[in-house]
Length: 74
Image (cartoon, rainbow, N blue to C red; front, top):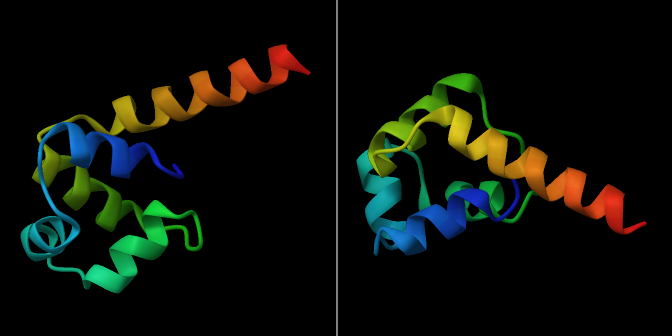
C-alpha cells in the first residue's frame, strides 16, 4: 500500500493532518502507513478508505497493478 494512500490523498487535495483527523489516527502514524513502515489493521484501512471516499479494493488493485508492472519489467 506504500504511496497508494498518499497518491489518493493528494488527488483529493487532503493533507495528512486532515486525513488523520478524519480517521482518528495520529498524523505520524498515517505518515508511517504512507511510507510503508507499518501495516495498518483492516479497521484503519477501512477508516482511511471511507475518509478518502474510495473503495478499499481500489487501494489494493493499484498496489497489485504496481507489483505486476514491476514484475513484468524484470
